[in-house]
Image (cartoon, rainbow, N blue to C red):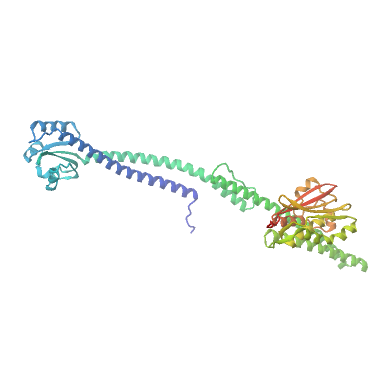
Length: 468
């Protein structure tokens, strides 16, 4: 049985709804509590003030009829119950039920009243058969307690008010909950819509459709996520196109030598080649094409190791001028055989931190191209200081590179003159390898060329800072 799974939309919706519900319940309980407590406090203060004002009319001695009439008059005008008591008999006469002085105040309360303290009570009064909020004000004549003013409000009245308040809160809370859930649902849909788009686009990318994009109109984290997804998708698409192009180029490059090897070996096996001289010629061609395949595979493995950082660059302090001079010595005879000049102008004070073998490999790739495509004139090599460190400049007077091809010249297998490159044995990977090595040294490789006039390759590298 497949386990039940909550979607992100449902999780957000449930979280928002639960939060709203908890907030409403908590607010109701808290406001109900505060309302009742604050209301009780307000009523208590009001009774306290009323009792003090009424007691201020007492001038001492036994309670007079005039004073009691004032209290009765005030009782008829106020919402609270107010009466004055000086003995049990009078109290029984003014109330419709039996009550005496002692039932209203106990011995402990009597002592407090004798000290002039106004007593506050929230309790069930058996004689009133109800729970009341009461204030008892003493009427003192010197040290004698001549009577009391008893003010009270039945708590049932307050409960009715709080019940009305609760019903209003309940109705308002339900309406608020409905509206909040409706608005929350709209917000959840708005929030999760781009996420659902990203989910659908991610599935398309996983199925191989790298053109999938999502709208990134929101200027928030989700918008940033959408932009990041689009950038990722674009990168994957570019990489996929590069891989397809790379595989196509590899297939194309290997197909030519394989077809030669297959054709020449078949000619040898079928006996078409009769003379020993022709056999040697065909074997020589097979050997040449196999060497070419070996170079292509070797360069591909080299690029793969450099791309995956498997091959570690071991940097040591290198006097660059000496390294260049030693590396280019082997090209002197080749240049002379072709009738080309080879000039050097190297600053001997430049020291870099680099991998000697890799730097020499870069020089070899560039010099091979320069000699291969230069038929007259020659090659100039210059090393000097640069604002970014140092620059090694290799210029030739060869056939040059068309302007439209310069942007692609460092791409793998890219050739300006494919026929000539095949004949001369190039793999189309030398500049790609060189560019990668230079970048691993923290530098950059720049190529400028004028078609029909020549090419200049500049290798800009950081230099070591020597302590003075």
